[in-house]
Length: 399
Image (tube, rainbow, N blue to C red; front, side):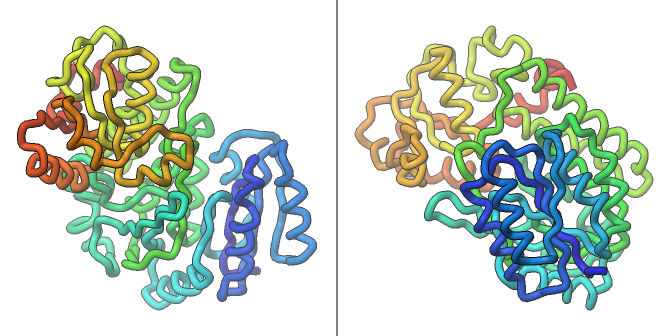
């Protein structure tokens, strides 16, 4: 029986699959079981998987009808034999010694869950991202004192405590299985968090590594997941919120995470307010920027998940007029087909209203300060946190 089972859900990702599989089979830690779950792919993924399985007998392939990533992860977990479970998404890849480093540290420290940092890769640009909690081992006492109070959301909206992805972690099987199997298969956004946070809440000990070992690929598709069926998308978020909130209600004697969970779900919903916020198009201001009136000319700064969604909504509805769309990563984003420009163009614009489309506290506050110093005469707006947490907003999102 292999020490570690790595589960790789696969669906129509032939462009990136070879790089993913090569990074896994070439791990310096060899005692692996590699379970690839083909979730009904219609491209060349099944053929690629079969070719790799011929070359490496550690690879097991499960072919199934398309059921979504939660269904695929459950199928992989049911087939897994390892004492420890890891996940890799099929459009990502990992450093060659990721599992060797994590396994050795996990065994030496005798913990239930270990996690590392990640690289966020966009084209040729790579950014190192770490968890928001200090490196080290946390037993149950230290979890309750230092981790749980900000495990989902740090002191500001929004900053991660522990990032929810399952793929930058290695789990002791008996600390994962129950919580993975409880995740509703209808959830398509927040599915990692629905497993990770209940597992962390019930772990006896964890270890946080301040080292990036996982490569998370960001494309325009992965940055903006969207459903064309708004009612269905709204229902999926209600299922996500209610099912995990019920789990936290059950475990509130360990630590009550319900307020943090509400903030997390709001964080996911804000970039999708155009479809999830009831009567969004009847507002006379650009939610959640209360000072930006309908019909305003604006400079939109930011082209990440939130910026893309906001730009597309404004363009579709003509709610405002985007005079300039700016982002520091404009060169890579242009290669992806986005009409994003170099921020230096702001100095030549007569438009005086700047909207910072960024939900992460540190980066938006830093950018706000920088822009105020460079352009003191312009009106610069960040998301209004009071607006986000108002009773009106929570009611409009139907939470």
